[in-house]
Length: 106
Image (tube, one colour):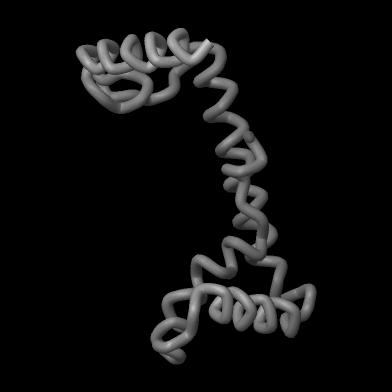
C-alpha cells in the first residue's frame, strides 16, 4: 500500500500537464487524456525528464520521512484533538455497529 502514495516522475509530469491537456482538448475522456499524456512523456528526452525524476525523488524522500515519524510516534504534525481518521472521537460508535454486523454474518 505504501507504493500507492509514492509518485513516479511520470505522475509528477501528469499533474503538471493534465490541466493544459484538458484545456486544449476539452472533450477528451479520462483514458484518452492519459494516453495523450503518455505520448507526451514518451517524446521527452532523458534530460527533459530529469526535473520530474528529481521532484519524484524528493517526494519519495519526504514520504519516507513522514512515514518513519508517523510509525515511530515522532514529530509527525497532526491537528490536536483530531483522530487518526480525521474525525471526532465520538465516531467510534459507528465502528462497533460494523463489528456487530460482521459477527452476524458468521
